[in-house]
Every structure is written in C-alpha cells, then in structure tokens.
Length: 333
Ligand SMILES: Cc1cc2nc3c(=O)[nH]c(=O)nc-3n(C[C@H](O)[C@H](O)[C@H](O)COP(=O)(O)O)c2cc1C
Image (cartoon, rainbow, N blue to C red; front, side, top):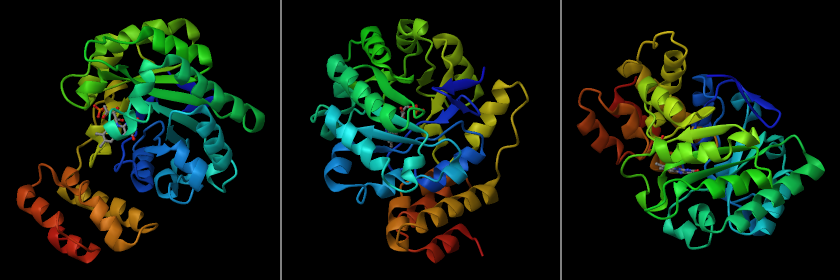
C-alpha cells in the first residue's frame, strides 16, 4: 500500500487499530504501535461529558502518550456541534491531551444508548447535523491548532436495506473532513453478519475526487482478508478491530504479508502470556489493581485462545481479583 497522509500527518503504515471500547486502552495502543500499526485511536468519549464535567471522568478513556504512541487520535461522540467545540477547547487546554495528533468523530456506533441521543450511527440519518459537527470541529481547531485533522468513522448504512451511503460520505467530505473510515456493516447488523466490501466501495467512489484518504474496516483478520478489502474497495488504508484483541501481532503479520515479505513467526504460548501481563501491568499504572484486573477479565480470554487448557484457564481468569493470582493461573513465576 502507498504511504498515507491524514491532513499533514504522515502515518507510518496505512494499517490502523480500529477504536474499541473496553479494548483500546493506552497500554494496548502502545503495544499495537510497536507492532507497526499506523495509529491507534482511543475508544469513543462523550463530547457532552467533557463539555459539562471536564476531562476528569473521561481521562481514563482518552489518556494518550505521544512519546510512546507516535501519532495519537482521540475519538469523540455526540450530536451537538457546540459540545464538540467545547470538548475540543477543553482537550486543547489540558496538558498532554493538547498534544493530540488527530480528532476522530464517531458516526458509526450502533449501541441504542448512543443512537437514541442522536449520536453515533444516528448521524447517518441527519447528514446536515453530521456536516455541522465536522465544521464545528474544523473551525475550533483552525483557530488554535490548524494542523490537527478531523476524521470520521462511520458505517455503510443506518437501515438494514442501506447499501452504502454515498451522499452521506460526500456531505462529510464537503464539510472538510480530512479522512473517512467506513465499516462495512449497517447499524442493525451491529457486529453480526458479513461486512460488505461492495457497500464500502460505493462510499469510497463517492469521495474519490476529494483526495482525502479513505480507510476500510470490517472482518480483516489476516493478510488474505486485508488484500481482499483493499482490492474490492480501492481504499487507501485499513483498520483492524476485533482480530487485534489479545493479538496485537496481527499488525506485524498483515504488514509483512501485504509487503510480500512472508509473515513473521506466530507468538508461542509464553509470548502470549507475557504480552497479557504487559497489558495488564500497563493498565495498573493508572487504575487500582482491583479495577484493572476486573476490567481486564473480558480481554484476557483473547490472549489465551488456542493455548492448551485454555477453557479451564479462562474460567479461572474470569474470577481472578489480583495480579499475583493471574500469574499463578498462567504459570508465570
Ligand atoms: C467491543 C467493541 C467496541 C467497539 N467500540 C468502538 C468505539 O469506541 N468506536 C468506534 O468507532 N468503533 C467501535 N467499535 C467498532 C470497531 O472499531 C470496528 O469498526 C468493528 O469491530 C468492525 O471491525 P472488525 O471486523 O475489524 O472488528 C467497537 C467494536 C467492538 C467489538
């Protein structure tokens, strides 16, 4: 794949981590960056909450480390342009956060709690509002940090019968969005069924003349699926989500595979366990042990998938309460 610039920002690889709530922790993003991911956005954070409560409550989700991550991106969700304006002003007023490289807007979340507020994928039904949000973000940044691009991540439709939303994509590009990423599922599909490369291609074509990078996302898990989505959509870059959970090596694999270099050796059981511990210890730098372990319970099974005795290990890990207990379960001395 060719190298890609988002606004003026050159990313080292057009293969990025797709933002995932509960998964895209700072330590995980640092690991994915080391594995070659071009950049790794935070999970979605409420623009309204930042506006009215400040960064306090949201900090743990949007904590970034430019030194360790390279290019950073904070993903915001909301439905009111003024909430985004205020949230960005607050971010730019906060140490470290103000060094963020990219602001990403979530226009794809299908979760009812988000959709019923007019946010996430609901914005696909209101292109004028979506465009106003992009414009508000651009305007706010233009005054202080014009070099921070505004990107959007969305889906191929709001309704089951949608097969790509070309006019929506154009409205975002017209509003000044600097990069568009499309996940090939509609809102009602949530994360089920197949992601449609054909529907992504419809949106890709709609914005081809705008010369902004276009990323495709959905069901990429190895070199073959990466090649397929690139060929079938004509995208400039890809985002990998679920396949990276407990498997940050997927970036090394796909990057090498696409470059035709042959895929690196797959990690053995010990490497996987050590990576699990590294991510957990990373989470413990900013969360109390008990909370870090509890929240990591849903992630640990991905690391041990396929290992001998993984079913029993998983059951034990899911009730573990401390790091020493986890080490014992994994047989790490
Ligand atoms: C647990 C989970 C949390 C997610 N959270 C977000 C999120 O915060 N922001 C976002 O844009 N997409 C989110 N997504 C969607 C993913 O970024 C991605 O678009 C989707 O999983 C399809 O890509 P994949 O097939 O590579 O997983 C989430 C997906 C999952 C499974």
